[in-house]
Structures are given as structure tokens and as C-alpha cells.
Length: 475
Image (cartoon, rainbow, N blue to C red):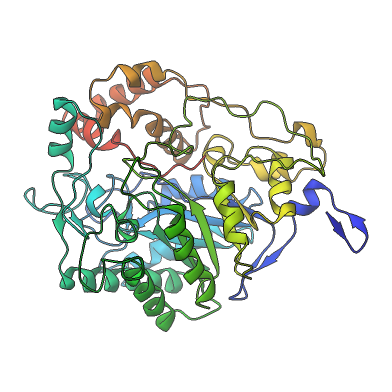
């Protein structure tokens, strides 16, 4: 890339500062993606400060341009997994608010801004993951149960774990809007730089945006414009109480990647168009897929080895590491000034620099690599002592997935690779190092031994909740 007649190096491209529309200055283009830490504890699931002193301190010192927290659920009744942090109805009061302030201080201790991802799992909230009666179903824009596998064992397991969600009433919608606004207020009061609305991966906001799960015929469904109504309402409501310089971001699916009936790229592009033209959003993160996806490269990548050699930059051939590059290129044709973050697939310094240089994206999201190598930006990507051909995340594949394929119940087997990353985040939270070469069978053995020490009753929770499929570890 030529700037004022000078060719910029890969490091220079990545370490360029970026000022968001709200005025927030990011020191470089690398973003730690939102990932569920699974470290919070009942009864209120407040931020687990002791664990976060270890985990977030590592990311804070790693020279990211921006840190996005793991999911914070906005309703304590509906968690996506036990261990999610929750913004409950007392979080803005002491002594709870102090924990949030401490979390913000830890995450931003070295000058990198941090924003909070706010989420609601909707129909993806398993029984037992949340403080609600056993007979209270999860909620969804329409009563559409998750389908994952065709065997009678799959159907029985899904019925026990997720069941059939209840279609939301207008009062339910009003309630989730209030909860999301409370989460934004909490983020601001605690000292975070902003918040991100999780509208991807099949969670509640994504369920409203997809025709597969939103079959309503009222003001919140029935057409692409009406399926966007809840997101519009949330953004408007949050901006009324959290104006700039508070940062407001949205994470969206490029598509659902289902065989039929899901969100298409054309409708996804229409949703992004509104976000970048509304004047209230500071950047949009692009991802894709959901629990029922069939073709998302992100969610089918655990058994595929990542790069073991950095690609060379070429003026004639672009490097296309990221999974959702094709969609990001369509987004850039909108010619908006709102930055786009592309997450999933990035491994090399040259690949990241090429994506920025080509205009495919403005921000580079790193997820799984941030778990396995917490100090990756400082140690490798932004380190001038590491040459371009060696500057990449360690080649990696989740080992032992033969066991996942042997599990007859897909809802359990499909979640084992995700559990590998949860396991490593728990290790980081304890002040230990990640174990990139740990196999799934050995992980299960260790976790089972640990669970036995804590009580036999927790084994069931781990099996049906901890290993349930979750898409919250970007690659």
C-alpha cells in the first residue's frame, strides 16, 4: 500500500490507528473477538474478578487495538451455558457495580479500549442454564425448535436440552429491549468504552433477523424490513441513553448457511446497509452460521489444520484467509465510512495486512488464536523482530475429534471441539497456560476427574450444558 509515496509494510498496515465515528481511537487494527469465558458462578453470575485478573490481564497486555468481552447475557433466566456473565436487575447497584468497574479497569489497564458484548440466547438457552423454573421454555420470535441431527437419539436429546421455544409476546419484546438498554447503561457506568449487540450465530437478535426463526406477521416479522425492527429499536433506544463517545457496535451474520430457509447473503447485506447508513453504529463485525448451519466455514473448521506458512503478498493476487471475505467485499461496495470488522480465518500477518490494504475490512478479529496464544499481537504480529514469513498464529487443529464423531448424539458430539477452547480459557483464568496440543479424550478425562472432585451432580451439567454446541469461539 502506498501512502504519500511510501510503501507500507505489513506491520505498518496493521498498526495503523483507527478513529471510530463516535471518536473512540483504536491504537491498531487487531481485535480480540468475543468468546464465552464460562467462568461466572451462581447465583448471580457476576464478573468473576479473580479469574478475570488472570485472563483479561493477558489480553490487556497483548497490544490489541480493541478487546470485546465474552457474551454478557441480559436476562438471568436465559443463559446459553452455565458460566456466562449476567447483567441482572441489581448490577447497577453496589456491591455488584464495583465488580463491573474492576473488570473494566483490568481489561483496559494498558490503554486498549474494551467494549462489552450484550447477548440473549433465545431458543438456544438449554434447560438448567439460567435461573428459571424447570418447566419454563426458552423464547424465540416464533416457536421453532432447533433441529440438529435426524436420529431418534438426536431428537430425544434436543427435546430434553432445548425443548420447543415459546413464541414471544409483545410484552416479551419490550422486556428484552429494557434489558439490553440496561446492559448498555451498565457498560457505560462501569467505565467500558462501549458495547456490542450480538446479532449473529443463531442467538435471539439473530433469530429475529432470520426468516427461519422469525415467522411472525406483526410489526417484528413478515418481511426483511420488519425482521430488522427489533435491531433498529435497540440501537435507537441505546443511543438515547448512551450517546457518543460511547461506542456502539453490532455483530451480524453474513448468512445462516443453511440448506434452505435461513438468512441469505442478500438480506444480510440489506441489514448491514441500514446499520452503516443509520448514523448510530460505530463498526459492524461480520461472521456467519448458526446451530443448524450446513456450510459455514467457521463452524466446520475445527478438524482442518490452520496455516503452517505465511503467504506472500502479491500485487496481482489477494490473500483470502478470512472465511467471510466474499460477503465483506460486497459490504465494502456500499462505500460507507463505518468500519467493518471481519472475524474468522485470519492467521498470518501478511493475510491480515492484505485484507486491510485491499479494503476488504478495517478491523481484524482474532478469537481462537487469542485463547491459544493470548499474547499473539505483541509477541508475533506486531513484533518487528519476527519476519513476515514467520509472523502467523501457530498452526493448529483440535485433536481427538474421532471421539466426537463416535458420539451417537450430535448435540453432544458437535460441542466437544468448542469445549476444548472453553477448557483453555478456564486454564488461563486460573493463571495457567493454554494447552494447544491437548486432545479431546484427554480433556474429557481431566474435566471428569475435576468434576468428580467437585461432586457427582456436576457431571450431568457438564455433559448436557458444557458440551452443548456453542459457536462462540471465532477462528
